[in-house]
Length: 221
Image (cartoon, rainbow, N blue to C red; front, top):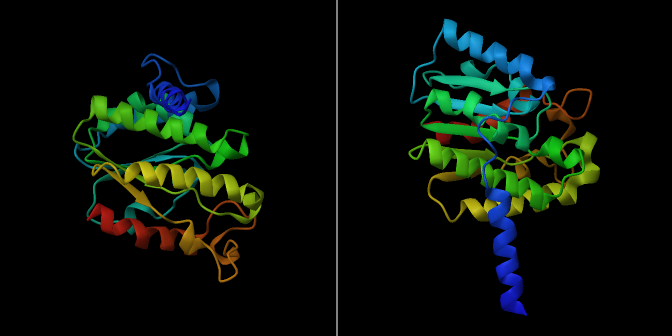
């Protein structure tokens, strides 16, 4: 029975890691933003071998991203309130064309809020890694852990579980990096540090991004 369960788990994980169709279009919700990226790239093509920041609004709304990492050729491809599955589906349009040396990914927060499980978020991360490996075998992936926010503190157990699954997976591969922002964003009582967030309790202010900068900078160097 134990052997059967291990075999079944392997099949499930392999299925989760399968990359979606490369021809899958962006949903109407995101298509406008993606086309704006593509138009900007035609006008000012980014240099290859840089760093791509991709993911949900925590990336999209990072106002000082380029200033925070001077001398690093980077592009910001955060879009909307996207989920990790959206990033996987759109990787051929918002990651692969840049041929980056490093992808910095933040997503999964919105997925859990929408009812997806930690195991599903982990499966989407594996699918993203599989896509990058297939198209960009020399590219590293740094995953920023799902942050603890006051507005979503009810999801804390799911957040910790998803982070743990992804962190354990990254330990087995030298091309993957796990950036733990969850722990330093907690106060002494183990709850989210309110001073790192804007009034909505979900998105970060300058202090929150300053903390992320300090944690991510060593990876970019």
